[in-house]
Image 1 (tube, rainbow, N blue to C red):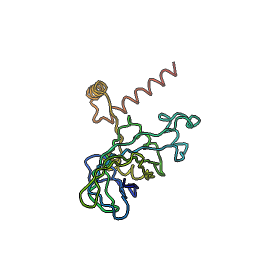
Image 2: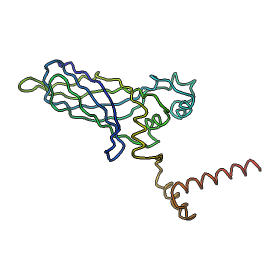
Image 3: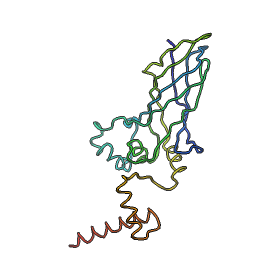
Image 4: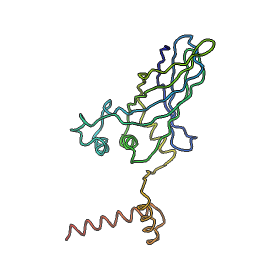
Length: 217
């Protein structure tokens, strides 16, 4: 069986993608002179949060995911980030290919909330590989990519922020159920508010006034 190995050598934000997308540079090694006609890969990206430190501000932002810092010894568990497929063209010995990973800025997704809470530094990732390879010097034989193939990579937080800023400049993204969206639209219409931002700010201001009034009573 061919001794495949994998390594991530870089990452960039794809500025031309229709939606938020990270492009990882993947090095695939089959061994000197080994002919690979093609490879169908399944790549699972996992965040390893225990493999970095966190500032006080980051810890506060991560409280919804992991609880208070005193509990992190039990709660700082890996998070699923993405699962993508890739067909690697034929090569001999070693090759490098781009691996696009579509992302979301949905704050209901645990990985997104994790990325958003980080101020700087790097995100410790582990990429797990599986799939099928078509190898052989003349004809070809079919062999599995061993399930224990993996590659660790530390992705700069700045790359994630660059990607988000390309698609949501100066903004966040919030998903609401249809009834809540309809109610917010009705509120905006009743009060002749010019934007969604104005509608949310009006509701927050009203809530603050209620809190103050309740405290005074």
